[in-house]
Length: 554
Image (cartoon, rainbow, N blue to C red; front, top):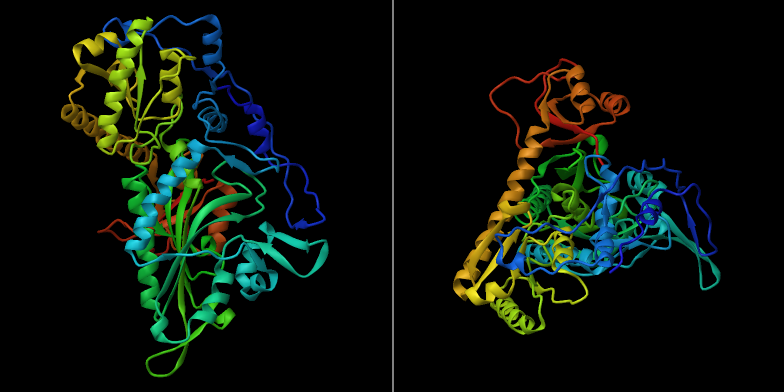
C-alpha cells in the first residue's frame, strides 16, 4: 500500500494557467495560475511506542528497517504549519481521493465514496420521510433554457461547460453540461403540472454537476462534483417557504447528529443569494483554520423560474397561477468539511455515525502456534459486533506489523481499535483504543470478550466519541466568534482570523466594501438572534433588526 505522490495531488488542484478549446467542448472560463505552496517540514507517521502495561502490546514483534521506512513514507504536514498541505496529505494518505486527468477533477476512491454513501443513506431516508421521491434529469441542458432566467444565466455563465459538437457535427444549439437543474426541471414541470391536484410535486435527484471553477480544492471545490438536488412545486408562497425552511432544518440536524459539525443556520444576504432565488437559507460550518464552509443550502425560488418557463396550474377557482418553487442541495464538499472540522496531525477523525468502519480489530501474535487462537478470537469478536449492527473489520494481513496498522487505521479515522494478543485470548479480554483520545489516556485494558458486555461497551464508547467530537467542534466554533459593534472591531476580528458577529442593516455597497477591505463576506443572518436589546448597525449607526456573521470562506 504505497503512499500517494502528494506533490501531484497539490498541483492538480491548483488552477492551471490557461484553458484549451476542444473539438467537442468549449469552456467559457479560464484557470489562473495559483501561487506555489510553501513546503514545510512534514510530520512523518512513525510506529507507535508500546507500553509494558498492555498485554496485547507486549506481543508486538519488532519491525524490520524496510517496514519502518514504509510506515514513514506516509507523510502528513502538521496542520498548524500549513493547513492546505495538511488537508491534501490526509486526502492522499487516507486514500479518500486521487486526481483525474483533467485539471481540477478528482477520482473519489472507495473509502472516500463510502463516506459519501453514508451521507446518502441518511438523507435518502429523511427525504422520503418528508414526502420526496427520487428521480433523474438529463445531464445536457439546452443553452436557451439557461438564458430564460436573467439572473440565473448571469450568475452561472462564467462557470459553464458547453458542448458544441456531437457525433462529429456542429450542434444547432449549444448544450450546457449540468451546473444545476432548475431550468430543465421547470421545463419538465410545465409538462407535468396542470391543476392544483398535481401539487405539491416534490422530487430529488442524486447526480453529478459541472462548474468550471477557477480555483479548486478536492471535495470542497472541483470542476465536477456529486450532490443531491431537491426540487419542489407548490400552490402557495407559504407552502414553498415552509418547504425551504423544512429542508434547511433537515440539513442542520444531519450536520449536528451525524457528522458532529455544529453549523450555524440562517438566511443569506441579498448579494449572496442563489442566482434566481428569492431567498437562500444556508448552514455555515467553521473549519479547523477558522474559515467558513457553506455546507448546504435551501432556496425559496418564488415564481422566478415558473414565470420564465410559463409553469402554471389551474387553481381551485379555475384561475391560472404560476407555481411557487424551492430547490435545495448538499454535495461532496461535506466530506471536505468533515476532514477539516475533526482531523488532526495523525489524519482523519471520523464521527462514528458517518464512519465507513467504526471498529478495526488488530490481531497480534509472534509465533505461528499463537496465530490460530488469536485469529479465532478476533473472528468471534467481529461476528459479535457485526451482529449488533456495528461496522467492523479485522486487519489480519501478514505484510504489516501491528504498529504500522495502528498508525494506518488512526490515519483513516476509525473511531475504535480493538487489539487482541495471546494473553488477551487467555484472559478472555481485549484492549480498546479511542481515536479521539491519543496515547495511553484513550486506551483501556481488560474489556471482557463476553458478547453482551463487549457490545454494550463498544456502543457506549462510540456514542461518547460522537458527543465528544461535537462538543469539541462547538467549543472551537464559539471561542472563535467575536461580537462586534463597529466596523473597526469587525476588521480586527477578521484580521485575527475569527468570525465577526454584529448588527447589520447596511447596503449591498457597504457589504461589498467589507469584502474588498477584509476578504470576509456575510455568511448568514442566523436564525438564532440575540434578544433584549436595541441593535445599531455596526457600519452605518442606523437601527438594525438582525445581527449578521462575517467570515472568510472557502
